Every structure is written in structure tokens, then in C-alpha cells.
Amino acid sequence: MMAIAEGALARLDEKAIRYRIFGRTYVLKDQITQAAKVVEQLKGIIGEAVKVSPQASVAWAGICVVIPLLANPSAEETGNRDEFAYVANRMGYYTALEPLLSRLLHDSSGDKRPKTANDKSRVAR
Image (cartoon, rainbow, N blue to C red):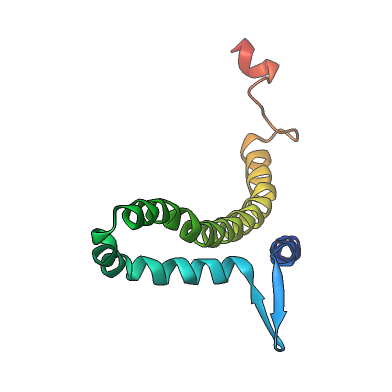
């Protein structure tokens, strides 16, 4: 189960857009997120600077609308990875739990077949 989860996470990493500059590899999404965070931190200062020009204020308002959209995909990917790992771990747990519950059900009923909601003997009672 863990091999499947690791394989899926590796495929997610492979799909990321990467580029090399001077021997260093960069992931485009990470670079955009970092730039958006820098602009987010400087938002107040830049906002004060563009107050004097209405045209610059309009352009800055447009940038302020787009910044959260650029910063959130990285958070979304991190959340998806965490949730994927959680679900993969839970699948292993429930896969291991199923035979134990099945054995418990067989032992307690004395019957060698598992009981289900559609069991005719239950409906007849």
C-alpha cells in the first residue's frame, strides 16, 4: 500500500514544471509562490506609493486581486499531499482490519458464512 502511495506522490512531483538556470533546478510553482509572498509582504508599502497616481492604483488593485490566486496553489498542493498520505495510511489500516472483523463475526455467530443485511434468516425473524 505504501509503495502505491509513494508512486503516486512521485508522479505528482514529475508533473511539476521545472527549469534549469546556471546548473540549479527550479520548480515554477514554487518560484511563483515565493514571488507572490514577497509582493504580499510589500503590499502596504506599494499601496502607499501608488496612491498619488490613479492609473497606478487601478493596476495595483488588479495585482492585489491576483496575488492570492498565485499564492494558494502551493498551499493546495501541500494539503493534497497530506490528505493523500492520510487516506493511503487509512486504507492500509482498514485492509488489515477487515479480516479481523470477519473472523470475529464468524466466531461469534457459530455460522461459517458472514452475516449481511440481506441475510434471509435475519429478515425472517
